[in-house]
Length: 245
Ligand SMILES: *[C@@H]1O[C@H](CO)[C@@H](O)[C@H](O)[C@H]1NC(C)=O
Image 1 (cartoon, rainbow, N blue to C red):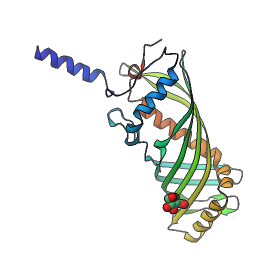
Image 2 (image 1 turned 90 degrees about the vertical axis):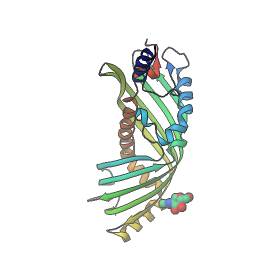
Image 3 (image 1 turned 60 degrees about the vertical axis):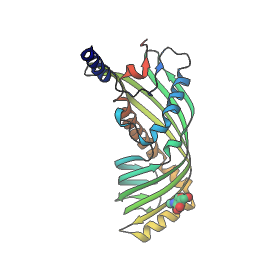
Image 4 (image 1 turned 180 degrees about the horizontal axis):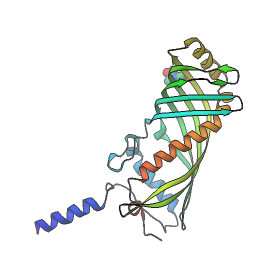
């Protein structure tokens, strides 16, 4: 009897990877959006530090180890490597809108607001220019950004890994709006130029943010896609979405 119990329990442990508090929603639920929103609220306390059992990385601070940027646009030539980027405050997000379409596909649209993000990162910028400003240098960046709105639209598809179904985001596009920003640079190569650049940014953050906007949209979409796929890659579909159509 005891042996049977152990065998069953070993099966149950391996059959389910998500912790017991992990919420589930029914695909056929006419109020699926509400179910998902409630699930996110229920997990908010855990999201801050992440959920290692299912590979969910910490949301606050949210870290991006390396970002390579290379872009030419009107008023902008930017070639930069950003390392050890950390954003604090992301777990205070509020979801203003969520639309899901799970009829024979996985499509989602979400609008969320982040009241404040405090960002730190190491930067290395070469051969770059914003308007007429030379923005080359290397050092540490600190920034405070407020009133951030993110609208993200995405489609996902089911994939099979070792006989288990998961979903993965295929395409994500985002539109990011930043209400206000304030930056400081601790530049080890060109401290005087960096102070001018920060003064320029802080005097008219909207101008700089507008120029950087397409880059911010694309970069946040790429970062979001990697984050979402990391999360969804650790959770079998059957454990978050029950009763397959
Ligand atoms: C960000 O805000 C904090 C606290 O409000 C302040 O101490 C810091 O100097 C600000 N940083 C920048 C880059 O303005």
